[in-house]
Length: 245
Image (cartoon, rainbow, N blue to C red; front, side, top):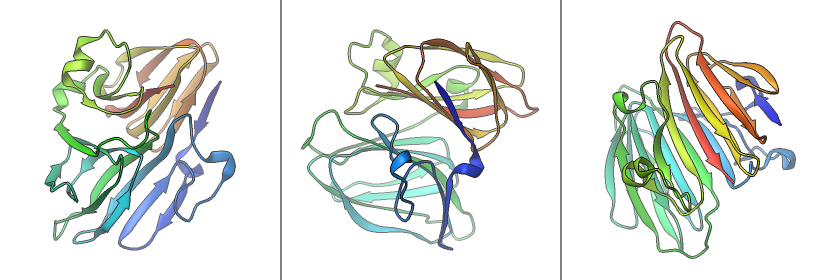
C-alpha cells in the first residue's frame, strides 16, 4: 500500500511567531485516523521567526529527531546542552526518563526552517541523551545518506559509523538527488517507509504505479517492492526517507 499525503492535506498551524505544517495529529490538530505511522508519532515542518522560539518544556519517553533546512536553530536542555545548529545539521534527543528543552531562533533577521520527527522508543525510562551532526552536501548527493539509526542487526558499516543513534529500530536517510538521477530503495514486507519531499520534484515508481511528488508531499509505504525514485525537476530533489517497523 502506498498513500501519498499532499502538502495541502497537512494541517496548517500559524501562530505568527511560528508557522507549522503537521503531517500527523499534533497540538491543536486532532484526527484519530491520522495519529501515527508505525512508531512515527509526529512529522512537523516548522518555520520559526527571528528572536522567537519554544520556551523550555518537558518531554519523556520520546526519540526526537530534528533537521535544520535553513537558518540557525538554538537548542538548550536540562542536560546542560547549549548548541547552535546550522543549516544541514541533524539533532537527536532521547527524552527517556525526562528532559526539558527549548528551541529558539537567535537570528535578528532570518527565519529558521526545521523538520522535527517524534518516535516512540523501543524501551521506556531510558537515560536521556543528546547528539548532533552536520551533514555535508557531498555526503547526500545522489545517494541515500544514513544520518540516524537504531536498526538492530544492521550489517551496513556506514550506518553504524556515521549515524546518530536512536532508541528505536528505524533508519533516517537524507538525499539530494540531481535532476534526472535515480535511486533504488528495497521496501520489505514487514517494514514501513515514510518519504517526505523538502524541495524539488520526485517521481516514485513501484509495482503499484507511478507517483509524482512536489515540495511538502509525503508517501507512506507498506508493501514489499523495489522503490525507484527519480528527480524530475530542474532543481535537485531533497528528501527525507525513514525506514521503520
